[in-house]
Amino acid sequence: MILAAGASRRMGTGRSKALLELGGKSVLERSVVAIAGAESVERVVIVTRPEDRDAMEHDLRDHRDRIAAWADGGEERTDSVRAGVLAMPNDVDVILVHDAARCFVDSADVNRVAVAAYDHGAALLAGRVRDTLKVSPNGFQSEESVDRDRLWAAETPQGMRTARFLDVLARAARDGFGATDDAGLHEHYHGPTRLVESRGYNLKITAPGDVALGEALAAVLDARSQDAGGSTP
Image (cartoon, rainbow, N blue to C red; front, side, top):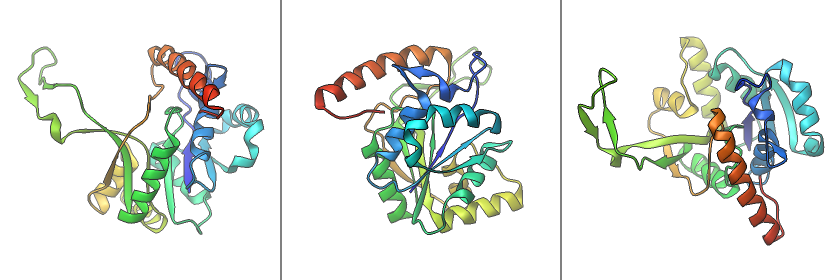
C-alpha cells in the first residue's frame, strides 16, 4: 500500500514540476507507473494543490485505474501527508509516502521498503553518503571533516505500519510538530527507523539543472525497457 504525494512546486515555468516532461512522459506519470508497478502496492493516493488537480487528472487519464483517491495538500509537508493518509482506506497494513519528484524510483526498492516497514514498523529508502563532508561555521572556511560512514541521504518512499502512521500524525497535530520527512516523525515519537539502501537511480527533480539529467536518464531507462520488452517509469 502506498501514498504518492504529488509535488507541486514550480521551477520558474508557471507549472507544477510534477507536470514537467522527461522523455515524453511527465514526472508525475513516471512516478505513478513506478509506484503502481511495485508488487506490494494495492492503491495510490495523490496529494496535490487543488489548482493543479485538473491538469494532473488529465495527465494521468491513461492511468485512472491506478488511482484510488485524490487529496488536497496542506500548508506544510506534514499536513499534506496527513491528508493523504486519511484518504487511504484503513484496511491496509502499510502506508508509504513517495515524492513524485523522484520519478525514477525502482519498483523493487519500493517493495523492499514496504516489507521493511511491515517487519520493523517503519522504514525509508536511503543512499550512503559517498562524498567527503566538511563543516564550515562561517560559510567560507572548512574547519573539520565529518565521518561519512555513519551518514545516509534520505530518499523516498518512506513508510510505516498504518496504525503507527496514524499515531505519529495525530501526535504531531496535537503538538504542532513538523518534520522534513516521515522518518523524522517516527524518530521523534517512536525511535529508530529501518534503513533500506537504494539500488536504483532515484534522482529527485528539484532544480532546473536536474531536468537535463532527468532527460538523459529517461532516455537510457526507456531504451533499456524497450530492449527488454517491458515498461519503465
